Image (cartoon, rainbow, N blue to C red):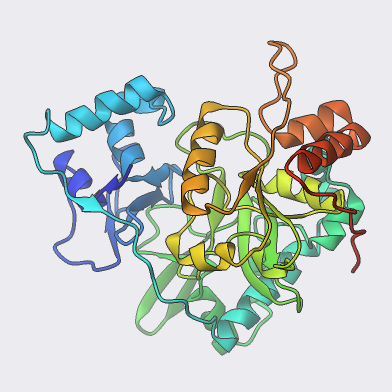
Length: 384
């Protein structure tokens, strides 16, 4: 279903917005006591929002749902979603403005952007094998991602203070370039904790590091260039308000892994990033949009994949995603995976199979599913 326009939703629930703002608007967050300067940003083009104080975030449905139901909001509860949709439309008597996803022109990263993202990726990877990252490695190991995979994918840890201390070593011009980049969000003042404050003749500037305290997954192409970075919280979110994944601001959104696949060989499309890493470790190509939504600008690239295989997750959300993807990518074939549905041994996704049954059995299950749709693929050993 199309998203309601987020500006319309915000105004409907009494959120005070600035009169101007083409791409994004800053406002007070309704989900915490937002004093001083506002901490929540509405991203108009994607019809989404994020608060840099309490970490509330999501799309326009989530904004409306959280305003109506609070912490009980569950977008994937069909009854609740239908009830919310009816409330927004008031029984179809109100015209709800729709923000359809915009097909943006593909743009190349500038040289400066590439350099900044590559620098950040290397910096975040640096402490991953140190004692300070014990909790991150423990989490990765529990998901079947070993030291070899951590090195291969250049996974990192955005330790609080790491980037700030490194910035202080740089010349002011270079430091300011990074602070104004996609890695930071500029706060209006210091009413909320800022990671770094820069003072000059014109006053103070306060910056918040977007991916701080998250596990870092760079999206790297065949040539070793870092196209984007995804940050994931360690473990499960403390609340539904917190986004599990965050991407860089104002950087072309990628389908993670798409830039490094061979389009002539079979490619597996699935929801989860960890699932994709597990699948690649078994010798198969895999990609993920980090959820169920795929930006329309990626359709042409995905349609160029000659042999697209969809691996569904074992929940209602995953099944709905499969139906959507099948419609958009008609040449794709759906893999049938026999998940365990026992109450005490429920398998939600492929990573659960990989962890609970072991790498060998997970490999056999995937190989069998692939063969059922007519492919006999010899796994390719990872190199590099």
